Image (cartoon, rainbow, N blue to C red; front, side):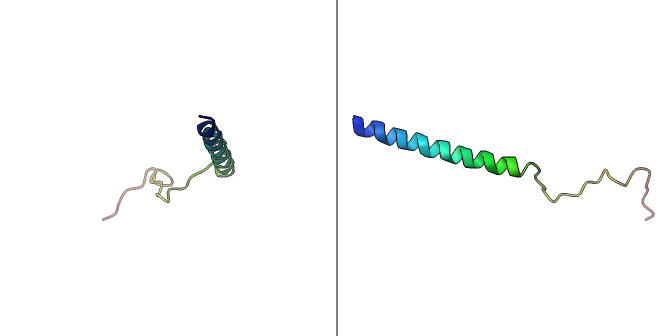
Length: 50
């Protein structure tokens, strides 16, 4: 039983480390660019001439 407890503590510590690194990454990268065009900008009032 004590062996399972140590393994559990190790797993929890590893998970906490992983979460900490993920939080650091998200703090650095707050904007995600999906490389999709924004059709709303610069097209107000324009019509197609075709």
